[in-house]
Length: 592
Ligand code: SRM
Ligand code: SF4
Image (cartoon, rainbow, N blue to C red; front, side):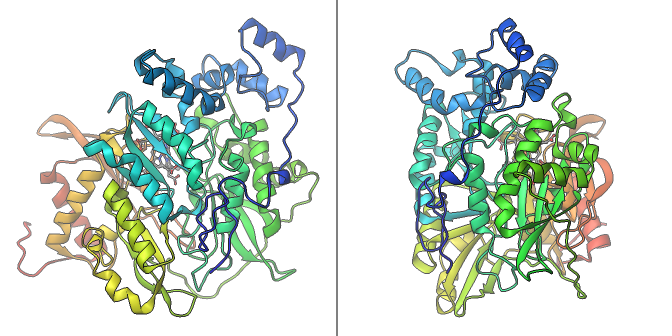
């Protein structure tokens, strides 16, 4: 198996460099703070903003001015300018200490600190659904965890009872739930001891690096993207310690690296998608760039061709320069127009490529290369048992319906990974898990482990395609409850129908589409509906999303379908029979 250098510590050889990769911080020398212009200085003085603690430090004066100009109408820019979210990396420990000593309470803390800035430390206050408790979002590049990390994470929620649980996210990442501020501050501190971190995971930061759940073991990949994902993550987060230079981006930004024709990370819906291709000049593997894909309440768009080819050894520098360009030139006026796509559209792909190349120190980046395939490639289902490229080994994928699991499961996953595999586990953007490096002669024994009664290796054709965002149980923006409902609906449909193949159902609690309904076969998005003349929880139905090569976004098919099982179940049953070839199970009475 590959030997990787990773601050994440999830390398298949088990080596953990714990926040201090040998390939070193010196590769990214600290940027100079652009000198303060008189104009900016005057505004800071007038508004009593301390430049040293503000989030404006690494911005150009032009970007500082744009941020300050909109600080009142764009609340997020105001909060970032006043005091950078990075201040919480140290303040959170001080606040926790004060709470522990009884000198303050979370209720008395500054609202912007507790509800917004703590997201720079991965702490998301669940004010609306569970006041005083936090969701903690980590960074797990390429979705790979070691058994040591799994046990550490289980330890953090094991004593929280029912409110403590975890989710695998749609970015193959972990979120822990149920901690109060003092607990989560301690976790924030402790994560680095196992090579993990939670810095820069919410608000206007780069989200978890996604790649391939079968990187390094896939017979069909062009390149193992784990090393690049770790290095990009290390660059973004300064080896998990926090990187002040990238804490004031105009908006969130998603980056994914796809090493095979499957496009496991859905590059088309990432702001930056790097797709592995062969360089016709050298035969080496590099990446074509796609730009601007994103979902939001107001706009859902696939990425466009970035007309850029990036060689493997340029990738980290390219991402770094791209983020700096986004930071300095991206729109800050209107949050609905601040995602990367708007800058790319404004400039065009060619100018964007030139600007990023200039930021790389005057590199002339090449335009995209062409890679043609004559055959049709269907995105592979990675659940179940599959031979690895390493002779004699398989990976075994198990389905975690909607990604929700608990402390005991962390321990069981760790034990299974240690007993049968190489002590690691991979997560997918479909919220499932894979165990790599299972010797072929151990597979049958492993399949008998009780944990796989709960999280099935051979889950049904609906369950294995199920994805769901957090929904109203914890998310304040949700219009409907999602995860529990999604599981109940699928269970009932699987009792009634047979399906010729997997059907991918994605649930999302509101139009932000964290559950990515637009990539699904059937997408269900929370929205208003009526039942017997009364307002009730409902869904908008999306159909026709395709993924893998040549993807298409699903479009809205119908709206106002009540979530009540008396309405939703027969509705979905008909769609599945009419459009997906489902047939009633023999002997099961399905009403007309
Ligand atoms: Fe998301 C905001 C959960 C993936 C688009 N998202 C939120 C918040 C933070 C809102 C909040 O404060 O409550 C949700 C936290 C709820 C909670 O308690 O868990 C939240 N988003 C999630 C997760 C956990 C859904 C899941 O169950 O897996 C995913 C975490 C990924 C991660 O590990 O970082 C998650 N969110 C996504 C994706 C999917 C993706 O990345 O492929 C999208 C659509 C793609 C995109 O971003 O372009 C997405 N989330 C949003 C948006 C809309 C962004 C926009 O430009 O308007 C918001 C709202 C916002 O940022 O203003 C949002
Ligand atoms: Fe919350 Fe909406 Fe995202 Fe679901 S889609 S997690 S309800 S913001």
